[in-house]
Image 1: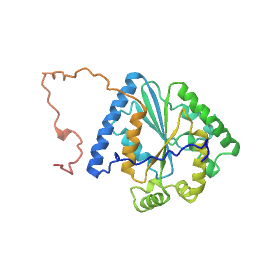
Image 2: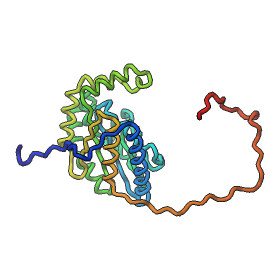
Image 3: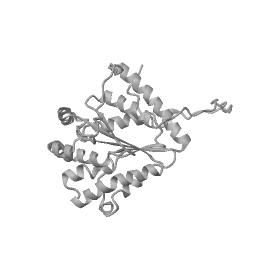
Image 4: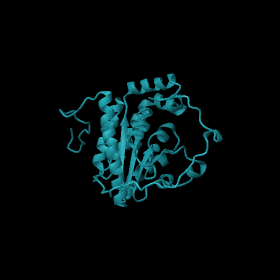
Length: 277
């Protein structure tokens, strides 16, 4: 291997790698989610601005991981951004313009479920942008991200990696499960058909945008539960945080004035169909 070649970033299994049962997974996930709440409080306390980008092939599990991250967080301070296809007006704007509008203010964290890297992936492979637009993106994207970092934004980029066989299994599951069929679009099918094109586009994207100021972190997601824990555990190491001191909370006394609730018969009540023990 040449002296200038970058060493592989593939994670090594060590003696500390844990294999968890479902019950243990739930317990560990809850523990990590509580730590995310502490991180969110620290971000607010220190007026930090955090951007996390989640990219990967269709079915790689971006939505699932984002749901686990945000499960206990305050949506006022942690926002998920999943933009639709650009409008005709947006297509005439500076490419990064519509993403800039969603960047965080002080004390906020923004999670992008797909991001400006659409241009390096789906737009490139499907021919939705010209060669000139693609080349301009590849030149300017690293500069744009360095500018974000210099402005004080903490920028974190995750690539969720799923194998060919596992992607096919998940596509078939979507086809056969009515509750998941909405996740399958004609664009997803094209992504499946153009597996190699997307692989080459991802490699080229990494070659340009895996920069020191904002590196790509690759997460293997064939095992979804393991991916949830591994990514969240890693995410918590990237933004150093401490417990935010809280004043003791004491419930105030209730009003002593009596109150009579109107009879339920005067209100439209939801029928009680279930009783849970």
